[in-house]
Amino acid sequence: MLVKQQKDACFCNIGQLLSASGGRAARGMARNLQAQPVSLKIRPLSCVAVIGYIRFAMRGIFCTKEVSSGIDGKAFSVRALLHKELQGCNVYTLDQVHSDRIVFAEDITPGEIPEADAIISRNVNDVLCVRTADCVPVLAWAEDVPLIAAIHAGWRGLALNIVEQCITAMRSLGSKTIRASIGPAIGKCCYVVQSDVIEALRVEPSVNGQGFLVVDLWEAAACGLERAGVGRSSIEIKGVCTSCDTDRFFSYRRQGEKAGRNISAIGGRSWSLPGLQVG
Image (cartoon, rainbow, N blue to C red; front, side, top):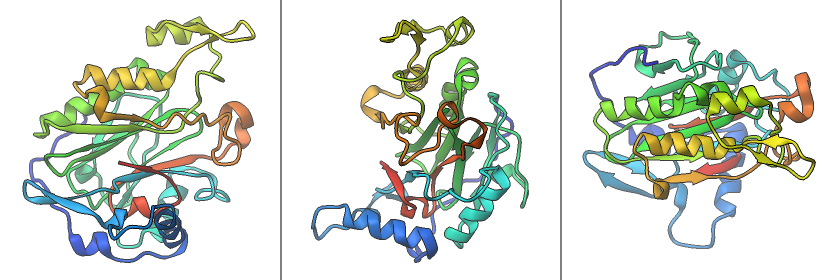
């Protein structure tokens, strides 16, 4: 469900994107750089000109749990944390309600946390964030215009087609070339479901080794992207199960109410945080 659409496009500010950050962001950037092969090209700062704006190779991050450990994982707390770690960036978080509601960053008033499950911005300096603890985070970006999006897709959101609706909204803003990354979420290995989830998702379930029905939420999200015209070659699936990967990610299925929230972010200097890089 598309909420509103603005008309004026924004272009990236190179100075803001290149400015240094402190705290976990600086440590994450150092870790990211150390992980790269020795080369004269430093990946986080590599860029190419694309129709009037600068496109950076590092677009976003699926943060590991060290980023949000120690906070309650609510939208206000995560926004405050990212404001501190990514000083100078406008940070947007959502009051996620497993809906198909999509908002635009330029429509959000300062301090507002809108009730929605996807957000789009035409300012690539903005940091768009979603929080998950087994649900599927999807980060998307255009390669022909300055346009980014973050999607929170649980099984209810997937059933409401939030992924394809968000990509369709991005296309309505002029993009013809969109890429996306599907982040850590509960995997087919662990996602035991009942018939209501299977019927809502309209997918063919599998049977695990214990005889229980399971579904693949990563594949469901990928199919949503494909239905919106994003080709398989433009879709990255991290393939990391939050329930299995106890060292790096929170999982509601594994931890219950005590589970924290995994942060997925795109735009600004979000790529400098610790985690799985996007793009």
